[in-house]
Length: 324
Image 1 (spheres, one colour):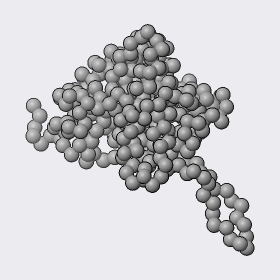
Image 2 (cartoon, helix red, strand yellow):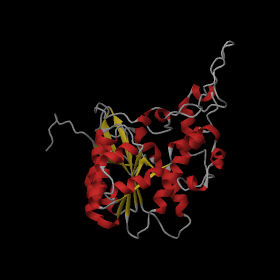
Image 3 (cartoon, rainbow, N blue to C red):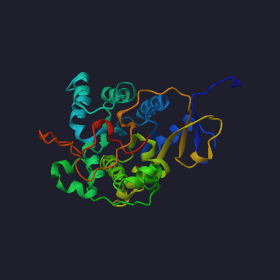
Image 4 (cartoon, one colour):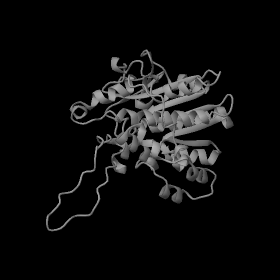
């Protein structure tokens, strides 16, 4: 019997706010084709439970289990494969791959577990330079890239529904910034990420009866939108029915009851005290800056013309569009 003084680190609820358990979540995940774990990027409880779920699903599904991660970009798949197959050392992989700052503490345990157990692990996110290009020029900006690069993402002219809440709310949440700048491409960049992650999940569902665990920011899969919506669109090409289970992560002042605003976000909702200390913030925690319509040139002094060019591309540290 729990004491009143107990301070649980998390609670799990159903979409309707009914108290649930990890055992219930695991049972549902074992029977799913695809499981989306929507995390709060800097929350240690999310990362711990992702690792536990990875281990438990592997124990149950063995060779019929695969993992995909938003935190790894598709142009690093070859390097990732070399590491998973023990062709290169850990320090070489981590030095050459484009990894988030919190990778060593929060995501490396899953990657290393996959390496030690021969689990297929997929980089699913679009290379950040292409997401930045969509943010700058819209989907048309991808017309200039070559065929090899196009293989690293979903089709450049994806189906796009601006009325989906996850995209419509992005602009609404920007407030005055959206009114001051033309930010119509921002949700398109988000959609290109979602579509790419969905595509690489879909194309790697290669074995009947397998379970694919995908780890991503909660905003990418909340309300069965984002990646989930695109995955369902791709699956319409087949005669198969996908059993999809979604998990979202929320932080609340009190976790004895799920706040009304968090109802329905996912099939299972991981509720964590907002006082929980945060792990290292990922470099994707800052919103993507508004796109520039033309290069910003430095002031020109009459006595000396400056020749330094100024890039209009967002920097590596400012390229997120989404999920915190």
